[in-house]
Amino acid sequence: MEPSRAIRSFHPRAIKDLQASRDVLDVTLADQPFTYAVARAAEIVVEALRAGRKILFAGNGGSAADAQHLATELVVRFMIDRAPLPAIALTTDGSLLTAAGNDLGFQHIFSRQVLALGQAGDVFMALSTSGRSPNVLAACKAARERGLTVIGFTGAKGDAIAALCDLTLRVPSETTWLIQQVHMAAGHTICAIAEEAISDVRER
Image (cartoon, rainbow, N blue to C red):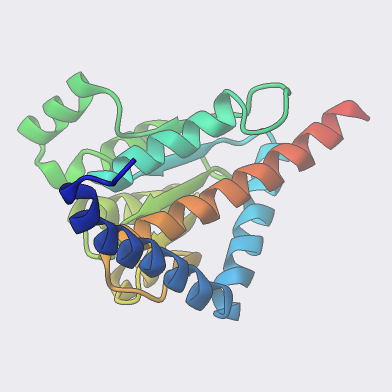
């Protein structure tokens, strides 16, 4: 069957974007500080879960969806049938988000929840491709005040968030959608390592 005119027109763009995805992954794989940061993030998450602590996630827009996705992988399952792991996405409660945004200001929608729910020993995963999202930065500050370990997911220019994190996963790119793709790949790796480690402990 002959491809339609639209398919013939769109095909070069499809190849170009898929190549961009491949290229940013190649560059990231060659970035040893990033790959070590992924491994260290997994270690931190495993240590927290073994100690009975929880993982909090937050981000805006596409990063909000990523936060919800990763929290779900831990609570429900990723690849292994096992007991649920405690994780919360701070992006899902419409009543809370609109109340905090209206009464306190949008910059406090995550920090208010961190102060309410976060406890020393928990982990806060802060997702911001730019590294400059005011509400994510405020949540990082609140998490540090409460004694949480703060892990930042950002891009090449994420200096602001890096200054507030114990560990930062900085994708070597400035393109939002490419950064988000690597964030999800790294997040999935962390979830896989965590559930394998925790399942092994619980099966002994």
